[in-house]
Length: 96
Image 1 (tube, one colour):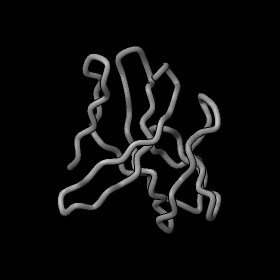
Image 2 (cartoon, one colour):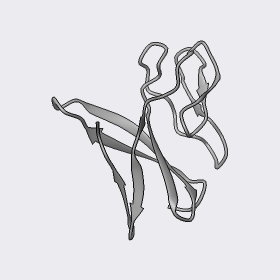
Image 3 (tube, helix red, strand yellow):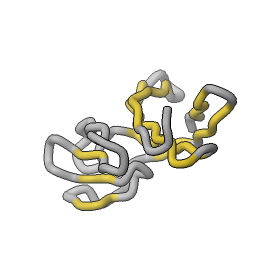
Image 4 (spheres, helix red, strand yellow):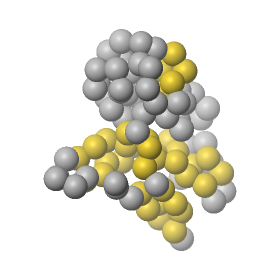
């Protein structure tokens, strides 16, 4: 995954709930992972069409930075984030 690239992933949380993620490499040794579940009404946000673009909700138009912050609503809360790190050739995401 190149710097600026976002890919889809998922994580199984305690209790078995599987959550879709957007994982973005923000630097040579930095990565962020956020839930793709919109905080407005739980629709799955789309991945960015290109590097630097936002995560967009197809249901009601909310937009989020790849780090989860709201760009515009109707969502008012950021996307949930998960601890993530690069370990060799892999990205490791931890659940809570």
